[in-house]
Image (cartoon, rainbow, N blue to C red; front, side, top):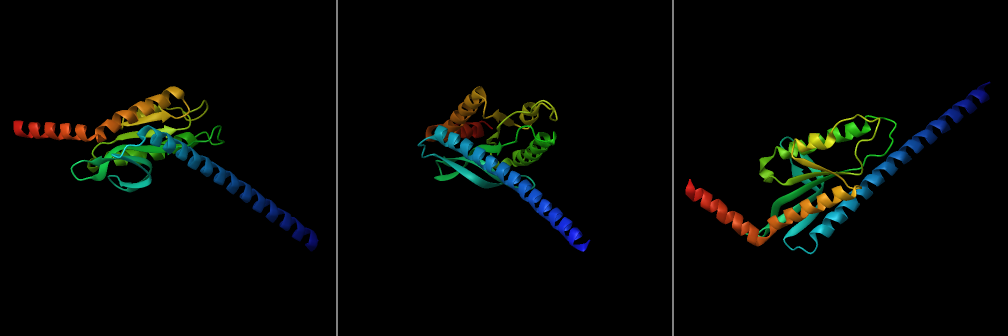
Length: 203
């Protein structure tokens, strides 16, 4: 009887280890997909920026929000002509890869809620000088998941939500980035400076 019980316990232990190993493998696979997606978006941003000596594309970059410091997936930084330093934040890009058909139908809502909190906290830090915020996702909400108008929710806090796998939305993303790049142009910086000086003299 003891040998049988020991065998049963050993079988249960092996099953538990196998199950835990399988779940760990799934988690690692999901994490890798997220990293791959982030790399794909970063390559896209770098292609838009091109050989621009006035702009840098940074990854895993720490930025201070109003209440906490966050590590951002992609930050596009412009060179300030008057100091020569890359200190003008042009775009802040958060990448979010959410697996399709998750067992937990609240997964999409949970992921978006976390990102909303992070980006909203950064938006509240006026020292960042109002960069353009983007949330780039691999898909929009699917039928059966917690149904919210996510693009509108993020728009309310100044964040443009982009489905990277949608051709038209990707074109919109590229257009926004190209417009932001002009702000790093030295001549545009001088124009802004001259305008600010004129406004100061008026008052």
